[in-house]
Length: 545
Image (cartoon, rainbow, N blue to C red; front, top):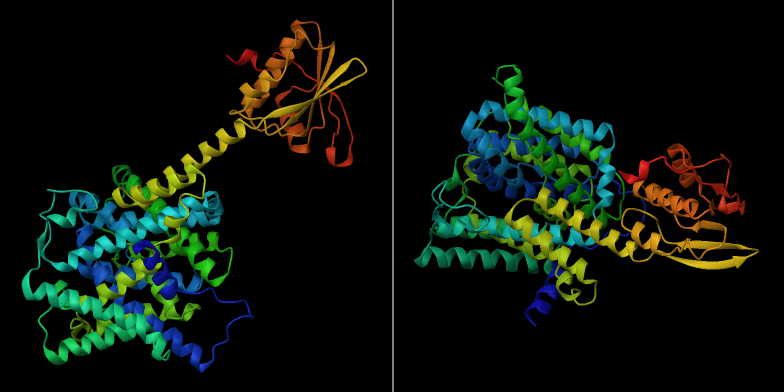
């Protein structure tokens, strides 16, 4: 009952996909929507950037500068208009070890190298490999990230965090000092009020984004009544100047490269995975495709520049992107506006922004959590294959307990092994007897997982002198398949019989011919029903040893 209610509630607050009706035009109303959405995002970015800077062990302005620079550059040249990027917790937890051991200058150098790696991924179009992420992994990703976002808000209900180094894992915040008494009840009440306002505002008016209305009304209420609850200023001051050009002060030696390279590689991978998965989620909302390589380039350029301006680096933020989408934004203008508003807060508006109650921002993020979590994944568990359900659960848990990159890799590996196992059991053959020869018409791909089943289809001792293996409905995929074909030909050769191959597709023909297993080189194409029988050359792979 509770699960059904949450699913229904999530359906009401999640963003509907925009129907394709031609490109958006910048009418005054569209500009207003984009700018107000950017303002909403900027307000929510401030406490997150500050908090993630604390996690990484650097000054708050290092996180704020990263949110501004990464957000601005990716908004201008990113692969999906409407996405929001900035300093993220997924990267911060990797950075903390580097900063504590070597200092912040090594972090800046690492961010530059990280950006160059991401630029390389964009140039070589590695972003297309995000297609290999199955849908169950995507569901586990959004569920895990929703839980991580929820857990991150728990620190706002504490008067002191857990002592550094004593506890690890996603539930580290449970060991901090919690609020109590009237302060806690006021925080909870204001969070609930913010969530109620976000839910109700669209039913009353669509002039301003619902999250902005919730933040504004609750902030006015708290300031006017002088309600004693924590505000942004209690975290840290956000006042500062323009980000200065800063060349990382590290020795240009091989030793430095040995220190920063592993961190840069992990950060680049996590940043791209989170960015590309967010790209896909925003693409589903906007009914758009493509842009993966462009997003890699944008993230790389943004992080390279950030490293030279004293920022901690960043990537796409699913929570902020969902706030932007829910606020009605669909173009690059919202992301640009968010970055510029953030800079304005740093330069001119710190005194105002620091008065915003944290409860209002927590309420916004709780609504993001409800809208982000794939509640339908709970209802379909019994209707989908067991392994797919297991993948959803595993990816969710690994995302929460470890990090996103590991979770996605684990999910893809499990899905790939499941696919290989299922296909390994599907190989079969239709057998036909014609004029003293036997034809095995193979059904299913021949690869490392199916070679054993393939070998069991044949009986060299009882087959006639000529045996033809027809690959019209099959494919020769890898070296294990080549070895299986050679081993089979060797058995028939030892029995004084002949094995030939028929109906090789062009890719199979090229693979076998390159391996040197074909006695002749002819153009056999099943699409045109050209049936060439190929003799098999044995001894190419030396019996597999």
